[in-house]
Image (cartoon, rainbow, N blue to C red; front, side, top):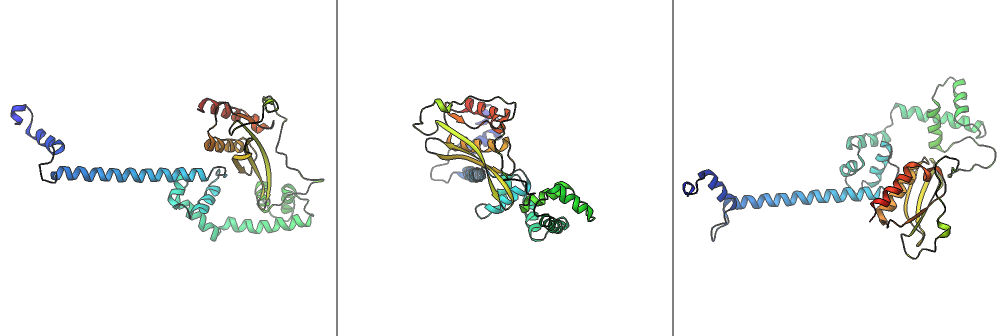
Length: 290
């Protein structure tokens, strides 16, 4: 038959094994069984890949709004979510290594020399801070430590004081300012005053930044609220008040709501909302929204 068709016999045999139907009453031969096993293995592999991608998506959604800039912050999130997902999956989603996470856990139990030095230094800082009637900040505490024969960097002292919630007591009431309108960025007109009351969700969003005192210092909270339902649709927290904070809250709101391009976004005139990065994010969202 191969000679009549003008092809090689090996090619004809390979075609028959791959494409020919099984004989009547048989099991399809070794080729059919092998193809079934390959297909089953491929389906299993696709199911595992689908489960992995679904798990990575769930982990990313649960971490919206949490500060994840430093490895220490990411290890904290891995430790907080280790009962919900595997350590390996969490480390892959947060772009840290499992060995780094286990090393971080060991350092929490068995601190290294640097951590032990920080404990002793913090005791000295607390003593000097109390002796000054809580008026000394990191610069004057650094000077006092130097007089006692201890040379430490000002940033290190300030970090330890911030972690302990210590600060120099200023005259008058201390107020955290979240709005800085003294900038040279363009200011958008107030369109909210001329708009009617929203009649459905995702017509008008309003945003602002506030601050929360904690045992580790001040935390800044940026929120985005739907004016129709007064529901918070996006939020983010961090130790610094910058454009990345409001961008994180804006990104969460877009992910959960997907509003129309006619959405009106209202905020104060702070430099975070008037910055070029945030204005670019608004323009890009308007072009990409359905």
